[in-house]
Length: 245
Image 1 (cartoon, helix red, strand yellow):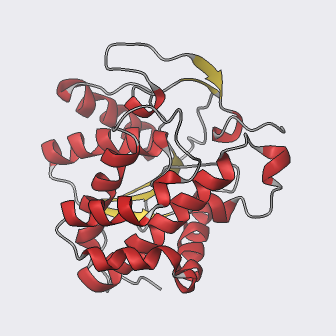
Image 2 (image 1 turned 120 degrees about the vertical axis):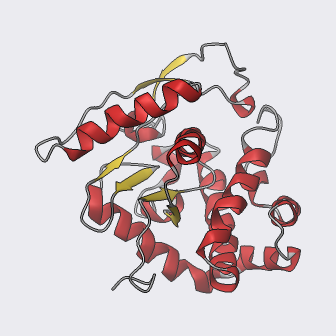
C-alpha cells in the first residue's frame, strides 16, 4: 500500500544520515533536481537495522556500531518530522544533518556515535525550521518498526547485497539501484550529464549491475579530504570496509 495517497515523486531516495556516500549522492541529486525540477521523496533505510543480523565486533571496524546506531537515532527524528510536518520537511532536515555530520571537519578525535546526540539533532531541526522538541524522538524506539519496514521496502527493490543510498527511478514501476556511489562532486554541467547516463542505464530493462568495491575516500571534511584533492583508495567491500567477507 502506498502511504502517500497515490502521489509518487519522480525519484525516491533511501538514505541513512550517517552514510557519507549517500550524502555525496544526495548532494549530486540536489544539483540535478534544481536543474530539472524533479520531485524527490527522501525515504529511510537504516544501516543499523539491515545489519542487525551481523556480529558487529567481528564484521566491522570498531566505531561502526556506534555510528550506525547514531544514524538510526537520527532517522527516528526524521520519522517524527515526517509524521508531524509532512514528507516535504524531510529533505531540509537531511541537508541539515549532513552539514553537521559530514561537512563540519574530520571525525578523528570524536567519540563514536557523536552524530546521534540531542545537541546535534536540535541544531539540525532549528536550521530546518522545525521544533527542536522533536529531538526527543532520538530515543523513540517505537518508530523502529516503521524504519525497518521502509528499509525492507528499499531492499525489496534491489535485493539484499547492497548498502546506501538506494535510488528508485520513476516509482512505482521504475527500476531501483544501489548508488550510484561517487567520491567527487561533479560541477553543475557534469551533474546533469552524469545523471542522464545513469538514467539511461536504468531504463534499459536488461541492465543489472555495474560495480567495484575500490573507492576513493569521498571529498568530505569528515574524511579530511578537501575539494580538489583525491582521497585514498580503499576496498569498501559491501560498502562498509567490512572486516569479514
